[in-house]
Structure formats: structure tokens, C-alpha cells
Amino acid sequence: MTTTDQSTGDALKAIVRQKYADIALTDSALGVPVASCCSPTSCCGPASTDASYSILMNDEYTTMAGYAAEADLGLGCGLPTQFAQIKPGDVVVDLGAGAGNDCFVARAETGETGRVIGLDMTAPMIDRARHNAKTLGFNNVEFVYGDIEAMPLPAALADVVVSNCVMNLVPNKAQAFAETFRILKPGGHFSISDIVLVGALPDGLQRDAELYAGCVSGAIQQTDYLQLVVDAGFVNLQIQKQKVIDLPHDLLLSYLTADEITAYQQTGRGIFSITLYAEKPGQTATPVCCPGSGCCD
Image (tube, rainbow, N blue to C red; front, side):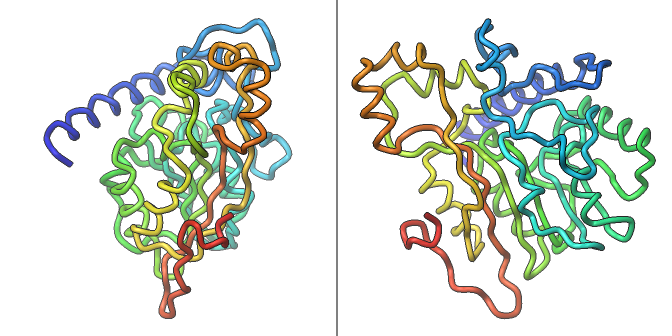
């Protein structure tokens, strides 16, 4: 990165760190998710009186083994741990662990013989996650303060990496995926849920979508996202789940007529949540799955 790019990236990280620190310090005494960055009732967007808009991104965790309500701050856009193929005894690293939700779900899969490490760059989140792990009595779940672009973790540590609606907020995504590749063992894999764009959005729509739902911030085209993963050295890319992020009709009407909205939605363009799987080559590398080849569709 150039000096200018680095300065911009540092400024963006400071904004994200402050935003998530505020969320981490929000009282959730009732054990229900607090207003998240993915919610229009949060600091990221205008308040809405329509409950159907209250959560745009989240998937339902409550039926998953290991789920702890006190660790669910409603910050995700998928269920990466559901697709991560975690086995007993695995070492799992969660990037952007927040209050520990995905870590505790991963622990239910890896069991007492495994190890789960949550990485986060927000100190209040680390404090909250450590408190949750202590309260739950989990001795094999730990939380580490650090930057995804420069992880304070050894190479070839993890069998599995998971992440939930975090990579899109990282300024240098290429470096983040390079670091993910570094910490995975040969033959290891990741399952990452994230926000991507498909096709050109109407002028101004992405900007206002970012204001309405903060987790859209930093989202890039899906093809570019997949190419970054390939460039980092990963193989056997598979989109495990994809869902459209339905923006409010009145927001779309700010930029499009009713007929144009129908045409826009029928083209398949828009903002999507994807859960992406990819592997670090082992002794025998799997052929690279390049975007556009059909196997990632």
C-alpha cells in the first residue's frame, strides 16, 4: 500500500474499531442481540419504525449447538460455522470474533480436544468475549487482540478459519486473505460469510445502502472478491450459500421507478451475502477454481 492508502486504511480501521467498541459496551442484560452495525436502528443508519427492516443481514443462530445468547450481538451476515466442516480436535480461528458467538458454536464442533481462537481488533470486544468464555467455563477458547492484516498468530496453526461479515470491512483485503492463507495448515480450509456486490448498482444506491446497513461498507464486486482469494493461493472455491440483501422499497424508489426496480431485481444485480469455502493446498494441490469457470457459480 502507498502512504496515502495506508493512511486511509488506518482511518477506516479507527472508525470501525470505535463503532464496534460502542456496540461491545452496549448493555445486553436481557440476553438478546443489541442493535448492530447491520441494523437500521444502529449508529450506522437511520431509525426505522418497520420491524421487518430491523435486521437485514442476520441468520438465525439459536438452534445451533454451542449458541450463547450473551455472545450474539447480531453482527453477522451468515452462518459460516454451519458450513465449515469442523471436526473434533480441530484448531479453529475466528477472524473478527466479536463477543465470541461463532467461537462458541465452533467449540461445540471441535469439542474438548480442540482449540478455538478468536481474533478481534477491538479491545472492548475482546474483554466481552473473554468474560463470556469464563462465564461459560470454556478453557479451550481464547481471544487474541490483533489486526486481520497482520495477525499475531503463527503460520500453519489452524485446521479451519471462519469469519462472519468482517472481511468486507478490512481495507486491504488482499493482505487479509494472504494472512488467512499463512495461518492455515496445508490442506486446511476456510468458510467465510461476507457481503459482496453483483453487477453495477444505480448511482448513489450503494452509498445510501451503506448508510442504512453499515455492513455493506467496503463491499466489492463478487468477481473481484473471488479473485483476491485465488490470488492468495486458495483452491477449490465453493459458494456454499448466497442470499440477496433486500433493501427497503422506499430506499430503492429514491433512485429507480417502480418499473426500473422490477427490471433491476430481475437482472440478478444487487447486494448479496455469500458464504465462501476455499482450501489451502496440501501435498497435492486441487486445481484452481477461477471466477467465471462455472464451479463458483
